[in-house]
Image 1 (cartoon, rainbow, N blue to C red):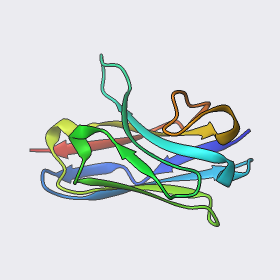
Image 2: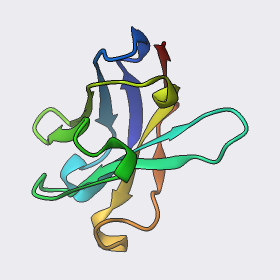
Image 3: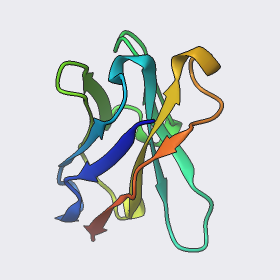
Length: 124
C-alpha cells in the first residue's frame, strides 16, 4: 500500500506558475503509474495528467496541454506537476493518485490510492 502527500499549492495571480509535488511512501513507487486530478466544489473530480511508471509516457487533459507538465523521480518517490500560465478556472483542489502497474494499462482507467489534496487558487 502506498501513501501519497501533496504539497505546493497556494494562491497565485492569473498568468503565474506553481509547482505541485506528491511524495509517496510505503510502496514500490516504480510499480505505479501516477496521475493528477482536480476538483472544485459541486463538480466531479476531473483528470489532469498522468505519467507512466517509467516516466516514458504522459497524457494530458486538453485544457492543460501546453501549460502543465507532469514528471516523476522514482529514486526520490515523487511526482510533480508544473503549472504555467495559470487561469482562474484552474482553481481547484489538486490530488495525486497511484495506479498499480500490474492491475491496469496505460493510461490507467482506475487509480487505487489517493492523496488528501492541495488547494490551488488563481486570482484574476
